[in-house]
Amino acid sequence: MSQTLTTERLWTYDEACAELEEQNSPLEIWHGHLVMSPTPTFFHQVIVSRVEEKLRAWVRRHRLGLVVAAPLDVVLEPDLVLQPDVMFIAKRRTTIIKQHIHGAPDLVVEVVSPDRRRRDYKEKKDAYEGHGVQEYWIVDPTQKHIEVWSLNEDYFELLGRFVLRQQAASKLLDGFKIRVDEIFVEPLKI
Image (tube, rainbow, N blue to C red; front, top):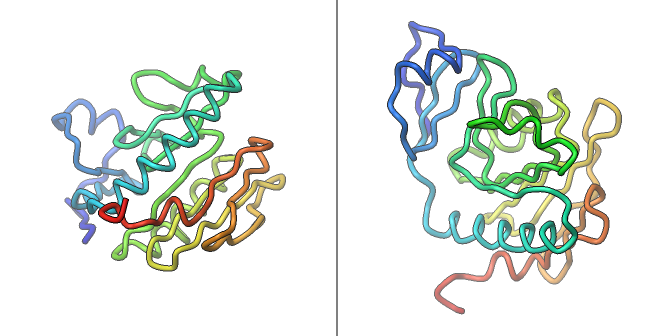
């Protein structure tokens, strides 16, 4: 379960970098509040790995940019720092890459954790939309579907909710598709 580390002090990203030690636990800054979550489940990480591998292979084959996975800070504002599960940054936008990412990735994938459904479906979606992420994928292991949202001017439009035996398709990366059932197969059944 996510927990806010402190409610008395509001943090900026620069303050957190200067005062906190580097860690691999998910730590985000939501409007100044430090929010720490337990590490993801094994199955969550298997799903992240599968999506990342497929996206990375496709992006590399077409020489479009870079694909990286959490934990990596994405600084959207000085007091709003998120750690998407997987992200794509187009070659023409690699200037946002410093020691961390300073600006909106082009495509963000979040794998929904059971205790953070609202955060992934509402709060993160709103943050990514408001900061110009071009495409947002919500991968939901409980519902066994993938939602693909595309930025249309200044708001996200749902391109599709893809279920088992369907392929989730990107608008941003023309031709990129993922078979939903391949993403959700139980890791011990392989």
